[in-house]
Amino acid sequence: MGNVASRWVTKTAIALVALSVVFVLLRNVSSGAVAQVQYRVLESLPQDNAKLETLLNEFGQTGWELVLVDIGNVTKPAPRFIFKRVELP
Image 1 (cartoon, rainbow, N blue to C red):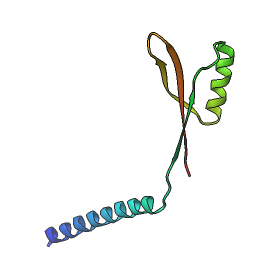
Image 2 (image 1 turned 120 degrees about the vertical axis):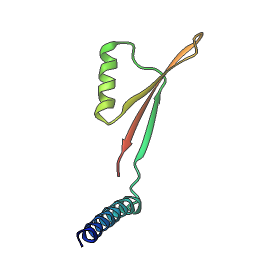
Image 3 (image 1 turned 90 degrees about the vertical axis):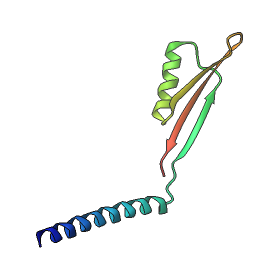
């Protein structure tokens, strides 16, 4: 009798966990909430460190994050700075 009861409890617990997972997944999918990602490309930044720090701090305060620095090719460097910002709905 104890064996049957333990199987029933185990199966019920598994079913409840499965239903909870399905509910959470359906809730996230049906909400239609999609994060919007924006990118910003700058061809050059100020060479003065104080001005550069000020500009980077302004970008950081508005949610921009530096994700890539592309220096171009070796013979003709043309640095580009790529920033990314994610806005949640």
